[in-house]
Length: 207
Image (tube, rainbow, N blue to C red; front, side, top):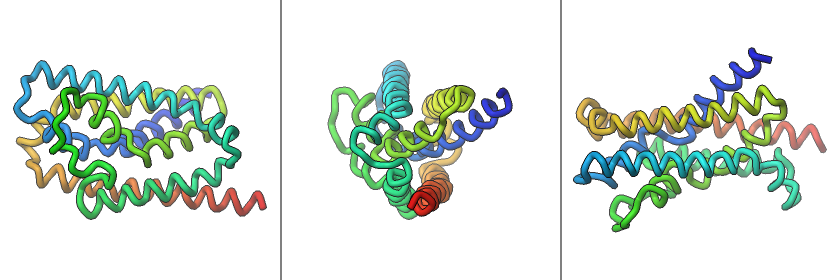
């Protein structure tokens, strides 16, 4: 039981961390908060991560109910969500940005913590689909507990990176952050391919 929990926790932490595209989020955070005082940045990080966590927890448990309500199978949703995630990965690899979140730093908003930072920069359409799939795949108590803790840990690591964003920019520069975004996009594309292929294999086995 503990082995299943620990294995699920480690894999879920890595999955959720890459789903959040941390270096892209850091780049967007730097652009959106440039010139703001440190205390306000801290507040934005805290509210954005809490908002992303609440949405992530809802999505984590909503998968089976949603699939049942609209009459689709998990395998069908795997194919759709994986395809959408693959498009996001391509966007990260080619331009270092998510395809649904370009141009957001130019928007003038009074509060950027929830929109656009938490949604859609942290949790966009592809991430929503992937969380729904991963949550629905876990069907034992140790696995669910490991998955939940993995989601929390992924967001915690992201929060730490956001707090260190200024130092990361000084050390890596914008080019370095962009390169890391591209590398995370490559890993995300492999995750997307796995989701799609699992969905196709499951769909073919059920027919």
